[in-house]
Every structure is written in C-alpha cells, then in structure tokens.
Length: 288
Image (cartoon, rainbow, N blue to C red):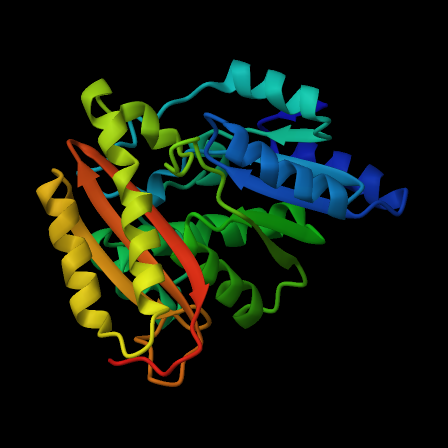
C-alpha cells in the first residue's frame, strides 16, 4: 500500500493502475477507522481492482461549535488496518493540500434540496462542505466506484444526487450500517460517550426499530407513533434534534401511497451527537 498526502503523487499512481486497465474504487473517510469502515472497504475491493481510501478531516463540513479540533486522528493505526485489509493506496492530504488558497474564497458545491431538513436544519453548511469535498475527491481520483455508509443516510442521498446532477461517471455504492452487539451503530463519535451513557445509547436503535414495527401495523398514526418515540428518548436522557419518518426514495414527507420508508433520528446524549436510521416497507396505506 502506498501512502501519500500529495494529489500529484496519487494521480501518478492512479495513472499506472489505469494503464493496466484496472478499475478504481474509492472509500472516503475521516479516519479513526472501525469495523464499519472496513466493511465499506471490502465492497470497494470486490467492485474494483485498485482501491483508494482517503482520510481527511474536512474543516468545511464542521460548524463553529462542532468538534473539528477534537475529532480523533489515528493515522498510524488506520494505516496498519488498511494495509492489512489489502488497500492499494491511502490518500491522507493536509488541509492546505485540499484548500491551498484557503476556504473563505474557495469554490463550493451547493447541494440540492435533499440536503434541506433533518441534519441540514441542525448543521448549517455541513452538506455544502460534504458536497464540496466529495466533488474534489471524485475529481482527484476519478473512481469507477465510490462506497459510502448507509448510517449517514441523508449524506448518502446528497452524494448520489451530486454524482447524478454534476455528471460524474462514478457509480455510488452503499454499505449497510454495522452495529455493536446491543444495536448501537458503529461510529467514530461513540468514543466520546461517557461510560455511563454507553448503555443508554443503544436505546436509539431500539426506538427506531419499535417505530418501524408499529408503523407496519394496519391503520397506524405515524405522527403519534413518532411523538411517543421522541418522548421515550427524552425520558431516557436524550436531547432529540429530530425523529422523523420519510420516504426512503426522496427523503420527502411520506404520502399515503409510499411503501418504502425510513425512520431517521439525531439526538445528543451528553455532549455526543448520535445519528441512526432504519429502512422498512409497509403494505397498508399510511395514516399521515
């Protein structure tokens, strides 16, 4: 595995791979890799001949009150994990390499309306930062396939829309959310949880599972079910940003005729913001 922080060096290595008719895969990450990331890498490995993992903590997608400076950076252990997994190249650029003229006057990509609502309401500018850095990575690597996790459900939808609207030839693939034994979605931010909060955190997944199960029942009132779930989370100590049921295809408010749905949640437990989601299908018309 090669490791580089240079766009020029990475492009030279990628050209060698293309000269050998190899398909290029990309897995963008912010590092502090865990089993969830590695599951995405296995998809890239299956779908490509030469795969690149990027590690870049992108300041453009962090708000002024968020954890950019404290975000865990574990490059040495990440390198070891990637090498053992068979990664072809690790691209770990500096902020200056990605934004050589700074970010204030940097061109940015404004995402489509699918970035509005949900996390878009609570993390102003976040998805613009995501869309911009992903567009840059797609341009730098020019991958045949790129793999993203379903845990960041709205982010995945934003990236799929970006790839379509900006005519990238990259095929955007998704990998399922990996979970701890108690159901908590694996996330780098789980390490921020106080020991006393770790057991409570698993209630987030249990809550959205209960909501999905209840909505699958005939003649259900979605609004009442969601409100009950929110009250349960708040009673357990969560501060809920949102808990909503949306159309899985468009992230729009579901109509009576939607069959594929997703329940999405973002909530603070102490100082740690957790997100999760669960896709499910219904047969009977919704009561909305």
